[in-house]
Length: 138
Image (cartoon, rainbow, N blue to C red):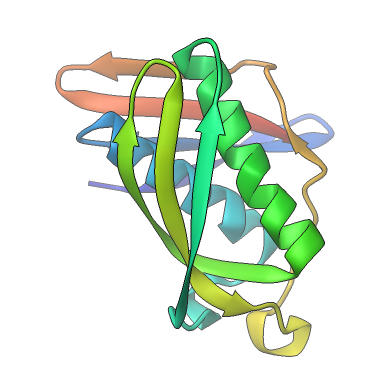
């Protein structure tokens, strides 16, 4: 199964992520977002950073989850190469990112994301596959 794909969107960029569970689709959405910022294959999975988000519903939770990860990238200079999500409920997502301190030369930084948006936001299950679609301000 494809983990995620990049979506073309006028003036912005998006991803569509896939998973067999909510947890997997949240992890794959985070990886897809990171792939818009840097070369995720170049990131050493040396350290774990916990990520936790709360919201009043599942779609809002996805945006908050991705926003928490962006916060770590922007404020702590962190590069993530993979994600594990322990649990996703209607109002809580808990997991961690695996990575290392950001090194622009090593990680081939290719873009900047300002924010995950609610525009065209989707989180749904179809025939046993979870699908998440997110558009980002760049």
